[in-house]
Length: 244
Image (cartoon, rainbow, N blue to C red; front, side):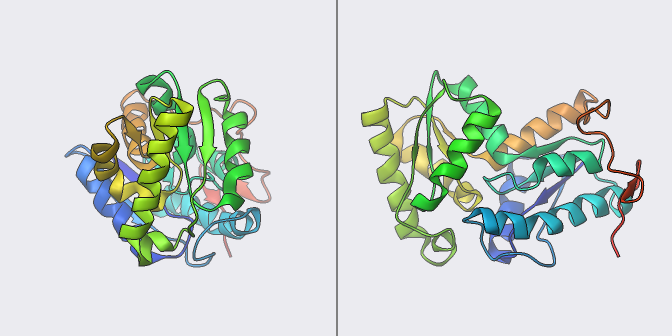
């Protein structure tokens, strides 16, 4: 099978790290293609950034169906930008890493806390927790004093902040698992888990493995109503978005 990981931002080092991570966890018969859109924000840390990223995400979904024979898609930003719109463009599975991580964390422990980046994204993350129905499982959204790009430019210092916040989540929230709230943290999951001693869930890994399971089960995106194809003047069924 072929899984396409779409990094909605344009920072290539993050995309390269996602490729390495996915290659390490995917099955031998799974081919992973990690890409960044041609245009969009360098990082996603606000609703405005998310809005700028969505057109590039949709272009990559359309290209995957039209040219690349993709079996499933992963949106590798914790805000899951454009997830529902992307599901309208394809009948293949499309998973956001936040949604995948929440599901996996709820099975790994009775409750979890999310450790993410700057305080500005707190409301965005709370919105996702509520939208996906994990309010009873999520104990707290914990932010850290850093920008997303710090994970690329100063990874050791950034991950030290993440680990410190994870330990507070264990002590103060009584969290039984941690969800990493940024795809830029993905490559450090194993190290963080060793340091804190409880399950740490990275949404990219969770989404890749869930994609494999859905393809094996021949489960795609339902087209019966909500995620039916876009209007004919925008896209034709099975053909994807018409991009000039």
